[in-house]
Amino acid sequence: MNNVNRTLFIPLYGKARVSKKNIILSDPYAEKIWEKEAFPVKGKSASKWLAYNMAMRARIFDEWTDSMIEQDPGSLVLHIGCGLDSRCLRVKNHPKLWLDCDFPDVISMRRSYYEETSIYQMRELNASDTEQVRALPDSNNVIVILEGISMYLTNGQLRALFAVLQEKYGSVHILMDIYTVFGAKASRYKNPINDVGVTTVYGIDDISDLLKGLQIRFKAEHSLTPPDLVNELKGSDKTFFKLMFTGKMYKKIYRLVELERL
Image 1 (cartoon, rainbow, N blue to C red):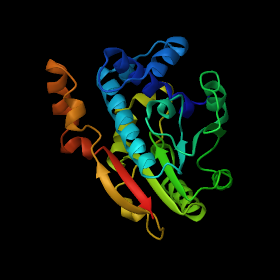
Image 2 (cartoon, one colour):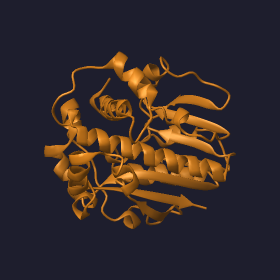
Image 3 (cartoon, rainbow, N blue to C red):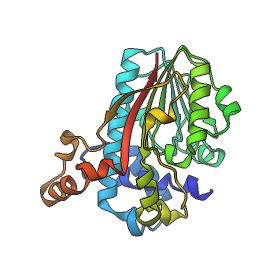
Image 4 (cartoon, one colour):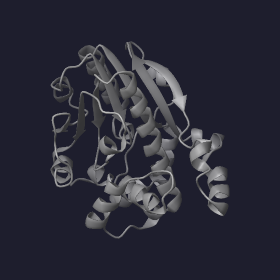
């Protein structure tokens, strides 16, 4: 497994850790998989603050995905860069087809824990390979989950991905977390992905510039640390988390954007 793929263990560990606390995110699959795959976690990857952030991010993506499926149960859901995540089981609503996509070695490991059904499938996919994206199943409406993946793609690769999605699907809904350019630069020194050997990531400052010439448009920006989830923390943890991760500085590093083409 290459270094980028190994980053999937960072959110897996964080979600398992928080799920055991019975706050923010219920994720028994993360607990089960981490118990079997666990290795010594050190450095920034072991931070409880990172675990809280990973769990909140997952919960926000879950709720958004649920809402999108509820609006159109006939949709195709594409979770690109799914890792070992169990979102397909955590959401309440079910689409016509859910496709979890990642690199071959990740999908191979994933098949040890998840079973395909008539509405759930796994697919080997390199998001930077437009021909592979073009070969994905057809649908009138596609819901695209890009959680923890945009920073490993150049702006050009992201544009190419979006161009194929808008060409292939009638309507496109995307939720994507991004580093800012400053955040990408800062990550060289303070990012847990460094602990698994990843040193190059990419940032976006102006999302409208990234989308220039495309039919996909910016719809909204969402908080990665909404008050209702922060308030599930207790005592000094809540106080410190609010101080460090809910202010303007955090947005200068890391953001969550919703995009659409109708």
